[in-house]
Image (cartoon, rainbow, N blue to C red; front, side):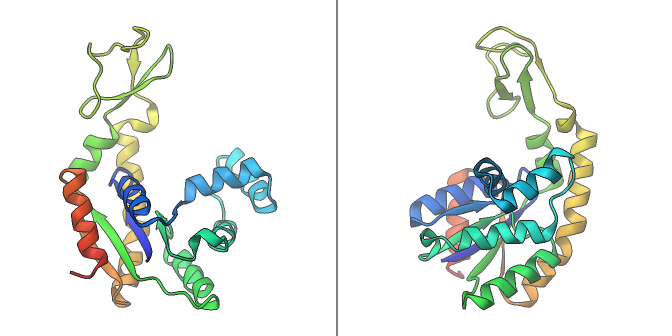
Length: 215
């Protein structure tokens, strides 16, 4: 089982990738986790990636693809893997296709989590953080007992700038611009399956399994 999970920030792909990976006994490979691990280990590519991350710049495609190549070379990926949020662009997808072809590996399915903009905004703008202890809440999914106050220390809860509606909307515009050609890319290869990403985690999980099985 070799899968790619795609979806906008807040679409829930990470949650579903973790669940299916645990169920199938295969690794979930998320770009962010992979970058942090490489930086912590101080590998050549990790050091290179850190230089960009420290400047707040995007890590170049060739570095990210190199890290993916290293990760897919580990023995735990032999039974399969789930790439969570990678590739992000057609350029990355083409590089991944070349990499897998060299290793005589094929992707079985690309699952896109389709979530409305309104729901994404609700999920992404609802986070609140305690100024005192840093505890995180969500106004819908995990609200504090007292509105605006931390359950742990009683500190004031606030919304980070990157969780504001204006910032989130910009992130979603960028994601859509990058991803629309990517979805066409995988659609043309007969690999794309769309899953409605709204509903209970259990309902979405069952839809993912059906999509992966081609039903």
